Amino acid sequence: MADINVYDRLEQLGITLPQAGAPAAAYVMSAQSGNTVYVSGHIAKKDGKVWAGKLGENLTTEEGKAAARAIAIDLIATLHAHTGDLNRIKRIVKLMSLVNSTLTFTEQHLVTNGASELIADVFGEKGKHARSAFGVAQVPLGACVEIDLIAEVA
Amino acid sequence: MADINVYDRLEQLGITLPQAGAPAAAYVMSAQSGNTVYVSGHIAKKDGKVWAGKLGENLTTEEGKAAARAIAIDLIATLHAHTGDLNRIKRIVKLMSLVNSTLTFTEQHLVTNGASELIADVFGEKGKHARSAFGVAQVPLGACVEIDLIAEVA
Amino acid sequence: MADINVYDRLEQLGITLPQAGAPAAAYVMSAQSGNTVYVSGHIAKKDGKVWAGKLGENLTTEEGKAAARAIAIDLIATLHAHTGDLNRIKRIVKLMSLVNSTLTFTEQHLVTNGASELIADVFGEKGKHARSAFGVAQVPLGACVEIDLIAEVA
Image (cartoon, rainbow over the protein chains, first blue to last red):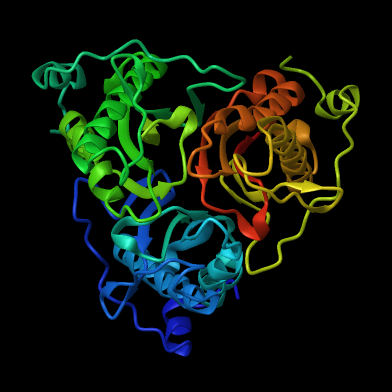
């Protein structure tokens, strides 16, 4: 899959990229240093609104997984806005996934698979990333999941 | 603001950098790899002591924002100690902000703005960073906020 | 200690590296970009099983520190699998340590010292790393600690 066109793949998967978001404060959605792009933490959204909730309390693991998948699409939209061409991405290097959790919910890895699997589907070999997933006390605006990402561009 | 002298800017803002802190254990306050400087998580301090508290319980968002601003100054002090000259910093690339939160406090982004805005004030264009902010169950020594940082040096 | 042979040092310390783990999902245990290796979050294990527990609730700080030390050994095993030769590692650059904590436990730094001290013991000067340690609401599978790592290879 090394030579896959990322936009063709998105179309095959039936994914339309949203407009990349804009930060509400004194920071940016992505910053590049050398060939490394750091993408800011993106919170889960549904129909353009914050996807609020806490795993273990009022959302199922499957719902959390769907939220993580939605974030991955938003992260890709930000990478598209940053690079101008997703085919310039050499590797999705690292994901950090923060799952809004009760003190007893322990399936953050299954929730995060929603993002990891989407990235694998879209980027193939280039999508093989390291990751850390864990449960946090809260996420800005009460979103159920927040994910950030490091990518390498050619 | 590309050619701003960072020390002039600190003086204009009335900021005196503290002595950079020293770690209490088997790690260092900053480590460089290539042109990338990784600064360790700095906990909030007030008058040289740990700024303890939990957002949503015994600190307001405004107090948390002031704590995040204080951490940003300490992070800059560590960057000064690391580089010897803050003007060598090409870019503040990424912030990770951990806000000591109850399970219901959801304004971690507003708290973190205290750091992001200070960095924008001091570094101008070079201060435009990606960031992730979220609520954690606790921070070492009960500090109300902890922030780490990645910077690029020339 | 710059020219220490890492395998000799492991033997002196009486440490046998385990088989590196395999991820259960659509991600990898380590990903390299340029000279930078990002190692995925590793959860604490004891006798090959998840080392479950929450600091402040059912594990002491000393037990948490032992768990962090065990993770550091697993991280080194993953670096061995990634590099083929641990002596190629130029620097352990950054650790992120997530301690499964109650809302009142504040000794995440002491827990994390278990990993930092082991890395200093094994890598000497090359092991001097930046780090961030904090308390999280939960960790996948209920593990008591999770740690990820960034290393530079020659």
